[in-house]
Length: 300
Image (cartoon, rainbow, N blue to C red):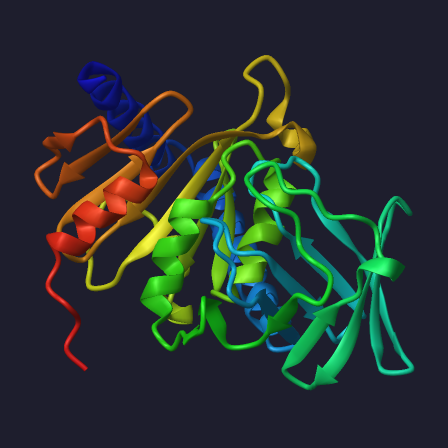
């Protein structure tokens, strides 16, 4: 596992360095266009968040917290309730007679919620498709979804906690587009970048710091962030940029505390700021426990 971890670091570093190398004037122009595109996507993503509202399942005992996110600008929704499922419920919603009604674009599923108040929805099973979760129990009739709740009955005001939970729950088997929808549900600002047959997604707490820099090798900064990478099939022309063909390559969590958590298809490991592997046997939850126990709490 240690050898696999070192190999993964070398591969990621090589990709980053390749993106930073200036070879010809044409390369410079391409890099400039990519930076412009990244800025445009970042602005779009930040603006889109201002019109969204997130409802979280109250008293959810599962490790993955079920959420509904609605976009009031175009009456669309995404409903995530099982991290193990490859299906992402998204579509249009309507409001009528005190109810919020969700219907997926493919027409397969529909969900109805009573609107208790502006911050509370109550699931109405008799008028909804049944929800079964691979990871645990289904969602019961009358279950409440509320705004401003991260888990249980604890109101979350710490964005860092959301960022760290996103790393733990990130669905590594999801497609690129499904991953973007999952990130949008967190409400955190993010940016995307296409580079050398790969796509990178960066998630951070502060919008100015979310932009994907060049170079990207200066990792340990004064804020925590996540970066997920997706690769394009090697034998295909990545200029076509077909999003459904990208596959997950890895996700890293960079901590201001001097540790980098990494999770790839067949390996997870922690490195320190000197690039030394601290551990290669922890899962993502255990990695975060380690980070929390080795990082000083933020000073308010």
